[in-house]
Image 1 (tube, rainbow, N blue to C red):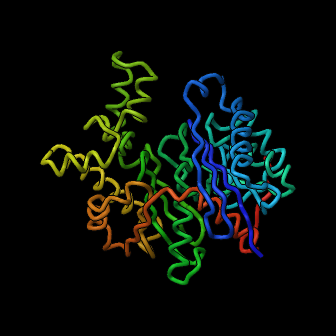
Image 2: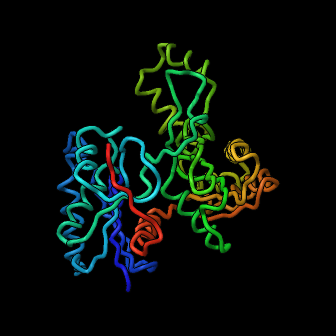
Image 3: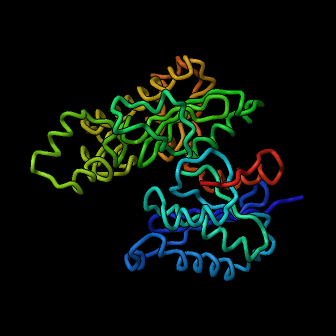
Length: 355
């Protein structure tokens, strides 16, 4: 029996959709939403009908019959902390995302869109590996400042998928292995997987800088800068996320542009880019201590993992810890579909969402 799974991933100005038949990708499409359209809505949740209608119209135009679907899966939104894996979308989840999400985020639209489509198709709707997956050990939650406990925010969907894929590649079970995974994209986060759970992380504001984010910066100087009178709160937030990292040093967000600069002999570009690799390697080393160095594989993933120069710099510093696997790309649509495929095949169980 084959399974047809529709995956939906809402982003800030687009909605990605993909259809899979078992492991085979039938299509992937990015449905763009012009910024002037997005700006008509006061809240992300207000975009629900617009985005749902665009997805359904696209499927109708292409002649895809939703009645042939086995399941629909969406990107998990900003729920209160949840476990990894699949959750079946229910009314409690929808109410939470609508009325009390942890924060405004386009991913909050994933569950309501797939729920409506699944209802028409007569199948179940799921989310998988929510953005808010949190399986941290208690010891990992202590930050040093009781006012600010550590929580888990990392690129769970892609990092967990590539860890499962790497385990399968070597004929082993994800639940029997330990991984340190670094997601290298516009934002960079790292996590450590111990026997099937993400037990600690280095979030995008705790570790390496990235193309647009400042990462971990000296706290005392940051406080001084906040109270210097030179910048307002919004500007300081932008310095950390949006205008930080490589952009702040080299005025570009594109790692490919940085590599062209390096090829043309730009020493500053080389130093900044290598510093990013250096910090990523430090983060990997930091997380290896969580499992007392018992790491089966280090995995480099995300868009920047396509870069030979970046991955070679990181690999040189960390391969003494464990073998390094490079699995480039975001892999989000595949990750969503494959997760639910495992549920449909009885290899995983979907959880019931309760507050």
